[in-house]
Length: 92
Image 1 (cartoon, rainbow, N blue to C red):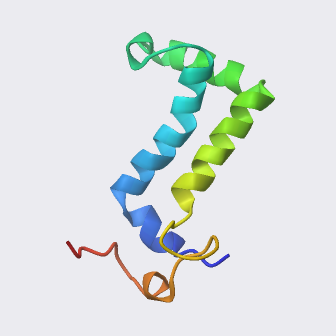
Image 2: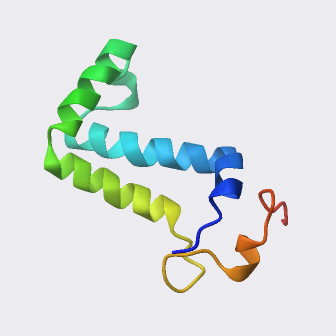
């Protein structure tokens, strides 16, 4: 599995995808919404409940896997072109 991690780490959108991939399954499983996360303590409590629940962990793992894989290439790795990037591609 060849993935250009250096470039992904430099991309703010990728970090947003990973954060959402981890947080949204937790909120959905516990029937919560963004509005319910009114303090760091509340968020921490949800996190602690989530890591004790295999269903939530599996859902989060699948979400992270989906955020990491490139659906435009066969398999899990990046394309040869993407592996050559030094910074996120700015083509539009």
